[in-house]
Amino acid sequence: MNAAAAAHEPAVGDIRFGIIGCSAIAPRALLEPIRHVAGARVTALANRTVAKAEELAERFGVRVVYRHAEDLLKDPEIDAVYIALSNDLHAEWIGKALQAHKHVLVEKPLCLNTADLIPLAATVEQSRAYLLEGVMVQHHPWQRELRRIVESGCYGRLRSIATSLCIPAKDGHANNYRSRPEQGGGCFWDLGVYWLQLLQAVVGLEQAEFRSQSDFNGPHGCDWTFHAQARYPSGLEVSALFSFERPYRCAHVLTFDSAVVTLQDCFRANLGFYKITLKTEMKEMTSHSPFQPQPQSKMKTVFEPMNYYVNQLEAFCSIIRGEAEPILFREAAERVRLLAAIHEAAHSGETIYAV
Image (tube, rainbow, N blue to C red):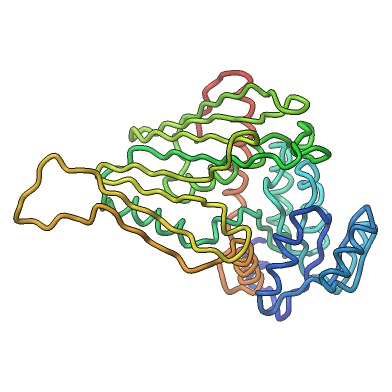
């Protein structure tokens, strides 16, 4: 939404959502969390397989079901839509929804083709509606705390960030877009956005050099395990492992001069209301003054139980109501450009330079 439109946007009360695409993520990402968000409700579903939409509608008390998403977008009783389609359809339906003056929450990634970013940017600028990419972790306070630690310098210089996002594929993602390259399949398009968003939030992406590797030995040539690295002019070294075939592990480990900060099981809060814990372990000092108190060797920062998707929905509703600043489109666009380039670099062996 452009600034002029935002200035004249009327206050919004109860925000009515429609869902386009009744994929498996829809209950977890919207239908269940919305029960915990005041002033928001789902009023309609649209899905090509009507029986699937009707089952969800009955289960969650949604009163209207559409066979065609175009009909849902024409519904004047809908203020915002959640797009839960396969990755290759995101750009098309973001554009249609914004042109229909509906606010849009879309599953990540924003789109697959970087050529779509220019028309999407123009549509966002011209629209009176807001767009948010569903990177749910960005709405949890652990991100602000990590940034505070880095910027404070309390543990010295940040030397490395190591990320593991390994989630074994349920049923091998058979009959799932994640096993189809043309639909944005593979582990990197599915999980890499979380890594790039973390870097954006904590250290930025400017001037980083990226490399990547994969055997592309998953179904239909998808990447089932993917490695990526980044190096910054400051000397910061970043590494990431993504996999649909290795044992479950989702963690970020930040190593500083004098401490190691670990965020273990960082996806747990997308399953419900769970505590997230930052663990800090001080490194042994080679020498110290006996007259100065030494820091505790191990510390924990425990955040109260939260649900990532509830946080995300509350943030989106606050943006729609004008109570919070929107997240800039260019942040999501920057991630898409890098996702595409890093994925391609695993084929070519080239180094990618962020600007």
